[in-house]
Length: 131
Image (cartoon, rainbow, N blue to C red; front, side, top):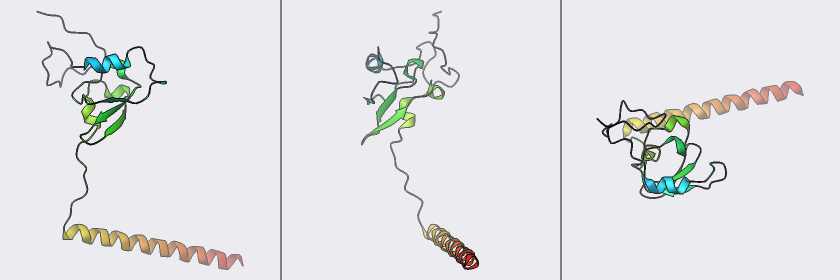
């Protein structure tokens, strides 16, 4: 039986990858951060979305490619064990459409207008009392 690699902070209970193989970290990413300090390093661009975040990466900012552009991701301690691609969404959610959505938006606009008018009226009353 082989010994498990000891990497502090990796959550091994929910890993899809086999435990005996260990976590996958792209070697090129490790080479890019090797010898650098997180405070002085620029954004490190990468296409390795499948790479897991190791404790050595904490503090660095990675530009993770989402298929169109590089999304800046500042790595914190809570992200250790997750994949880089989890923090760079590939799809943009616009909104749900339809008749109901339009009615909800119309009601929201009306309530905003009514609250703005009430605030303006209150301001007018306070300035009239001050005179």
